[in-house]
Length: 140
Image (tube, rainbow, N blue to C red):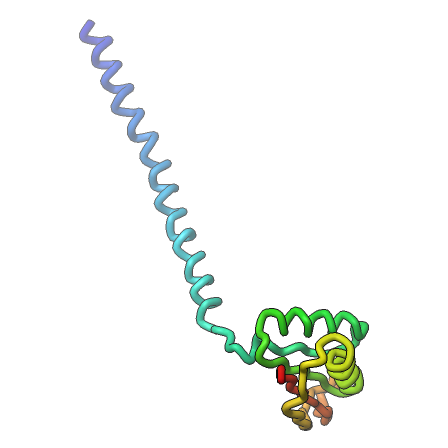
């Protein structure tokens, strides 16, 4: 019986040693879980201001998609709306503002129009001047 008890004790002694590497693997995975919140912290560092949220950038989409975006923004922030466009899209931005004012929300008033020139790098590496416009609409 002494041989059986010794062999049972040696088996028990060997079993916990086999389980220890599994615990080490779990410890190695824990730092990965710590890295995920750091990415979330970086996103939280750039807070949006109220003016950033009420801007609609006009490009080459159909007119009604920009009008829908403007109505959505005015429902979220009813104080003001800024419509921005560059280059050939400026005429579409003016159309968006006028259709919005005349047909959808007749209480909107143009409070400010800013025009400027922005420098943009072309695909060739040259710098080109592009006209830009901002139309600010306010309920009034």
